[in-house]
Image: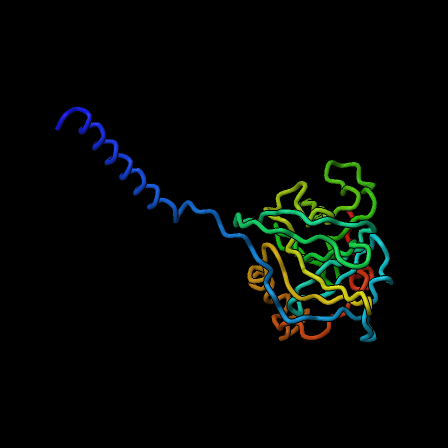
Length: 243
């Protein structure tokens, strides 16, 4: 074997070994696949009397709440009063997804799980530490809520609903899970049909099992079927904490 053949053969061996090592490393170092919407049973948004909610009746920049996809998992519905474009986001598991943006005639209606992505704080009929803030907080501390953000007073995570509930500050590791809505332009009604992004329902049920059994009873883990009642947060919750 002459010098040229030796070098060529060595190069092929090294190259083949390197390719083999890379191939063996691909599985543990691969990025998570893009997240897709998770479809649940469709649920029409209705008022306390059972009548379908009309999108045109919603007040801009006001906290509304309904439950989906389970009887005990709360969701914020917001009319941001302006068209909201879609956005590419990433969940805590590094999976990426494209949030589609607002729906409705003005493309201004958005919905997100009201379960904080950090400590799983959520609105209850008695108390809520998390809500959308239409105006700036009067609190002079550094944790004061900024205007037009969803703020959690338990850990001071702040999410921007105009950007798919992306985390702007605080310890939350991912955006709030989005709840996807269909708007019927003929009837002006809204229907929830899927979630998108990092779901935390399993962790939520595990952490609050005893509490939910008192608040909701045996149906806490039941899937919402056909209809879900929409209320203003102030009507649903006795005490909304502002910080």
